[in-house]
Image (cartoon, rainbow, N blue to C red; front, side):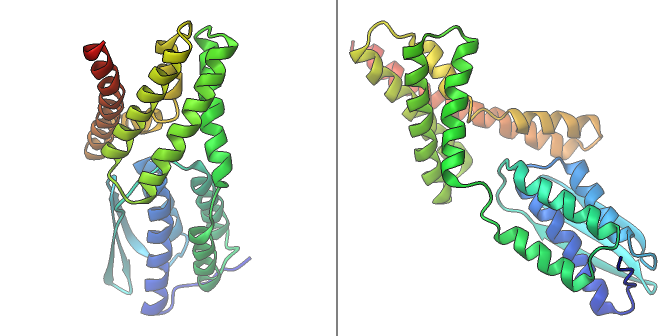
Length: 261
């Protein structure tokens, strides 16, 4: 076990960077604001000669302040993009527990965080298959038949691949989900053109499951109940915008086809 005291300003800066990086990774991957604040505060308070720790986080900004040798040290970290990836949240949670228990020196902790940041996460093929399987599985809940399940699997797979490429190209979340909705609508209409007996409504609903902002909305409600009004309202608004983008994307090809036919 390592019990490394903060004995210089350089070490205080490293501690601040460790805490802010851990929080930024969690925030960027969809962690609740209260969890981000709690993790950062635990990391900093694990050093006994650090006092007056204050942490404030919104959905895209982290502000850290603490006192060392009667001097105030402040760190501000901006998180520009957010996604939902529990893999990295779990990684940082494990890291923070080990750090607080004294299993890392400051330098080792910094190196470990860099490894987490460079970790590719779950393989791309697993994410694609997860989206496709979730689409097909949800259709079971809607009493769909095997043909509908197969179509939903294909639509969910293709729509996720296309949306992932747009997300990788740094398009905004509204446009990414709007395009995903268009792909779902166009593909479902194309299948219905050749297979008139399929239940298009159920396929559309099931194929959008991977894109619906369930985690975002849940986190927003949790933040609101914790008193983090700014983060809660921001998260709720984001969830509404994502749902609106998906709805508009699906409705556009369906409306166009209905108008001309």
